[in-house]
Image (cartoon, rainbow over all chains, first blue to last red):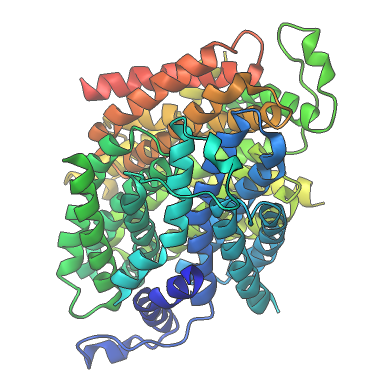
Length: 151
Length: 151
Length: 151
Length: 151
């Protein structure tokens, strides 16, 4: 499955992120004792990964929406507006999470709402449009991680 | 492996992108005959996927560089400058590829150079820093795809 | 003054944005009666303009910070971290505001906090570094508009 | 005029950018002798400013295009596609210019083409839509600066 593989695949970057997080919290000294730095847990890794997936699937979905809209097919209207809004917020959450920023949590609460709206709009088309299906599934994953973080 | 899985995992989004590409080139009619649109080949799918990976790994790498630089460790100087330059160009290539823009090719030529500089800077640290290793590997993949596209 | 001129100068774009906002709220019909569409009030115009200024000043400030950090001058550490966090949130607020998204308000609340932290970090250097001064002033303006919107 | 004021207004940020550029080229010492760093010339200041303006006007223009497309008005089709392509490239040029990256020049050559296509698409509507007019004018300015840089 696409989503599972994506989430699994980001492991190396996750470990890297976690190591960076550890250092940012004062556990920097260990890396003189190892060839490769071990990874500590980062609260923001999962949300960063799912947001990254949304950014990729969302740009493709927006292209798809524009392609139909420019042919006069207005059935993609809600989808186009929702995905563009989602892109703005997933972009912020992704970058904040990669920065290990304490504001990631608050931004994730707003992103959660944007992903819900985008998932709802994409769901309508997910049985017929592969782009919407991919975007819908990436939003579902991001919703889960934003909810965990915001809890 | 991280890179292999990532490249494999983006399949669903790739199919979606390819379908969009087909429509943009005047083969839109078929989607009335199928429940889910089939996928045509897109020249930009692979470069989009590798650029997406660079964007994720690069932001994590920049955080890592800043974390060391702010501790006075200037060994990450070249890496920080190169990764930020790479982020600007992989961002453009990603979005253009998702748009099926004919300018993707020209942008990929510039991105190729940015990824080469970033890979070179990250390589120095890839044995000791997981963030640099992940960024280095994502750049190697992006270089390959940019070269194919620019050929 | 830089800030005054910038805020004044964005008038044409503001009018455009306001016209778009009016249409999005169902007052689209008037534009068949005029050569150029008149502008209705948009709640998001001012915050969009100040966020745009922050994005420009912030990237320049980050370059300045990196330039000093790579020379071993760690006095810019807080500034570099804060400005990168601000860039992520001003980017989201800018794009949401340009979209007339109802989520602009919630995003502005998080952006407000990022701008406050960035302004505080930049203020320390604003007497000696033109980049920090420009970034500091753009953050002050953005803080004001985020506060108005979030009120 | 909007464009004139914008270009004039960015003076403080330009000076900051220029100072940063000077330091990056080994003239860092002078800033110990002054309260505020003087500005050296940067080849990238003007293109950064015009690209920033394009990013702001372009997002507003895309909202305008989507607003009409979702009402079934396909006259904005070329404009929507061209402005999204322009946004990807002006984003890269802006960030590279702010970084004083030597790749700014090559990216500006690709951006030049994107701005030409966007200006052409917007021009059709510039007499009737304030958003398109603002985007058209920002593209004209960016074209000039990209041409100067690429010459």
